[in-house]
Every structure is written in C-alpha cells, then in structure tokens.
Length: 110
Image (cartoon, rainbow, N blue to C red; front, side):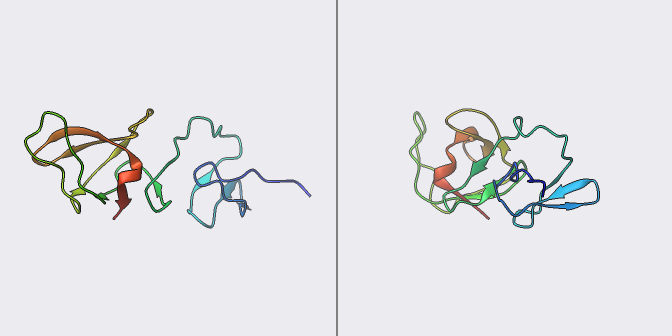
C-alpha cells in the first residue's frame, strides 16, 4: 500500500485521496500531490489552532508596546491578519495603534 504524506498545514496523518487531490479531514486542506509543502507557513495560536491569512484573532493578555502611551488590552480583536516569516509571525493593523507584528502565542483564533 502506498504511504500518503502528512497534511502540509496541520501535519495530520489521516490524509486520503479524492480524485486527483489529497484531502485532510482535520483541517479540510486540499492539495495536489505534486505540490511542494516547503513553501507553506505553519503558524498556530495559543490553543494550537492553525492560523491562515485573513483570519480574525483575539489578544489573550495585555501587551505592552514600546513607545506607546497605552497597552494592547486583553480581548482586543484583530481582523485580517497576514502571516509572515520570523519570530513575530502575525502582521496586522490594530485600531488605535497602527501596523503591528504579534507573536502567535499571545492570540487565539476567533
């Protein structure tokens, strides 16, 4: 029996074939078997949920911002995030603060 690769987004082992596509039943990601998974960025929130571009997240603790007169408060919703490489993988705009980079361990998917 041919061994199928793990899901490139969530690393699930429960991948199955559906026609010419491979499908992950856990995160519902579909891809061509010939696609390389090396260009896929995997970012998870504080609860282990997979994040993707365009998601809305909620800040789970107060975050101090250098040079800003106030903190980003717990419960602040951040819409339309963008995932980038680096130690702060979430690029976003926060109302009242402007452009920010956040660590994924301080947010949860909404």
